[in-house]
Figure 1 (spheres, rainbow, N blue to C red):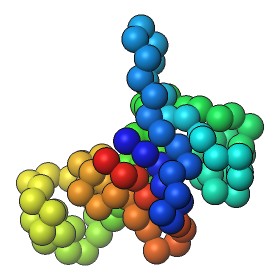
Figure 2 (figure 1 turned 90 degrees about the horizontal axis):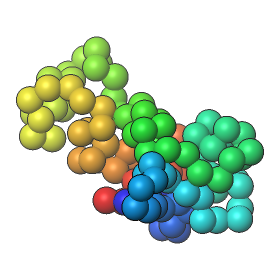
Figure 3 (figure 1 turned 60 degrees about the horizontal axis):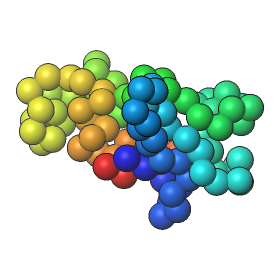
Length: 101
């Protein structure tokens, strides 16, 4: 899994035996990293738990008008932010970040 900024990989999932899976920043350009995820750019890696929480917020709200219809179009029978992100890449109109699975 990769964290993308436009078409550039800026983070990648790292899974080492015996360690917690992490999303690791691989760009030196802090302007291409999510400010809120990487704690104002003070850190270079976050747990996948924190990454999934951040990514799960990158979808329409559960109480949005027409949410049931959108879920149906995505082939989902219930609201789950992470499952929505897996279908949409977590793309927003307000920034250039997305997730490549």
